[in-house]
View 1 (spheres, rainbow, N blue to C red):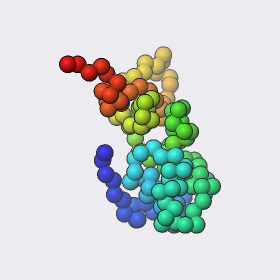
View 2: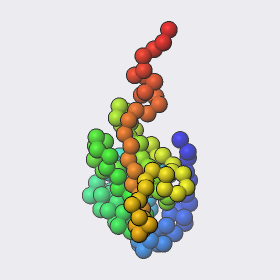
View 3: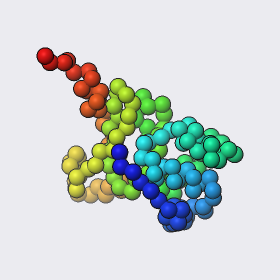
View 4: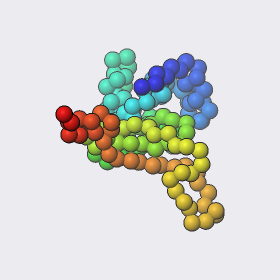
Length: 149
């Protein structure tokens, strides 16, 4: 998995650039999302940050995620069967693949253009795209495939 590192100034600039006032808790939540592209739940974010931010509450995490989503900083994704809403920091359109066996969500990069759709006319103006796929990841597929002698 790719590792991401952001300076505090980069995170402050991201918040400010989207009209969100920086606070210690907002910085911590956004840093976690930016540096851990694991599509976490509210509880996973809360648990990851609690030791360093003992006054943090699940409600604060949830409200902050709603604020970030409304500001266009992150996306809420719900692929079903994953324990509810998950949160995604990404600055480009991509698809999500949910492994129905292990529950891992993987980002799938899309090629240039619009490879998976054909619109009925050129009058449609696409503002964003959400493509969610379900199946077995390579590890789970290998584990379930019959072993050959």
